[in-house]
Length: 321
Image (cartoon, rainbow, N blue to C red; front, side, top):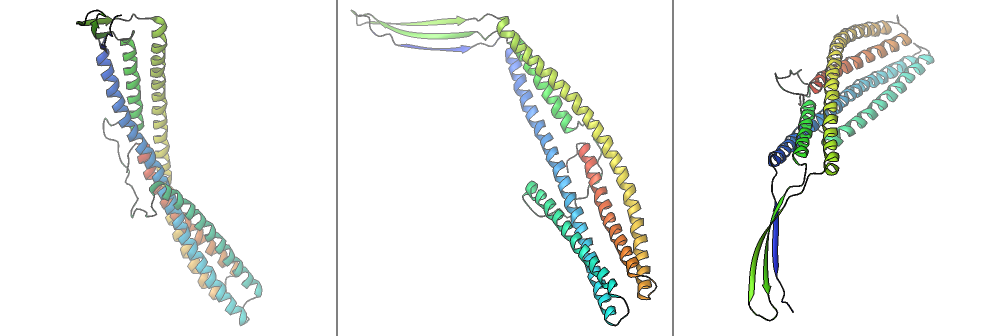
């Protein structure tokens, strides 16, 4: 009987012409695409954070103003109750003042509910309830030659798809392999052994059945990446135009709100004096107070919306805080 023949062998693939460079191209493109995708993700998170911050500031301002409204309503109700005792006014006026106090309680409860909801959203994003001291952003400009992070990430994705297509084109067949085989042979009737060392070269042939689906898949990925790029570019341009229009509108509204608040405050002061002199009814006074409160809320809202619009245009331009 023949003896055992210990064998040891290994094989390694050989790069086809252009295949090594194509693989390196894919690796570099993947690294670049991952980095730029991370930048785009950071911008998306910044957008959510910007929206959350200004929603909190707006609801916080509304709560503070409505707290002042409640304080004013309670003070008025107390004053009306005193005047009712001395017979200066009718009980219907007291009921009207009580109704205003109840309405003020309801309004501030709603505002606090919105504040809690907006603060919770902010906390989910930041894992903190601490608000920035000054979240207002100056409107930034885009540096010459700088790409919007979403567009840069899209172009990197297209470059990766192109690199993968190039690799598929350079890999029309499996890579050839070279192998080394060591064998120790020993005859059954002879204790002597013989060592042999052999080389093997395997060269696979290209096959349309194998190559066509790979090339088609790579081509499809490239076409889809380019199409997404075009959509992203159009969306960025549309978002920037919309953000610019919103900023212009917010600036106008903020200016008008200042004037409205000044007029409402002055009118309320006049009506309060007139009411004390008995020249104005309680109904008119409460109506004027409500208008003044609405003007203060609108002033706070317009200020928050202006600052939010400034942050939004930075977001549309791809500028992170």
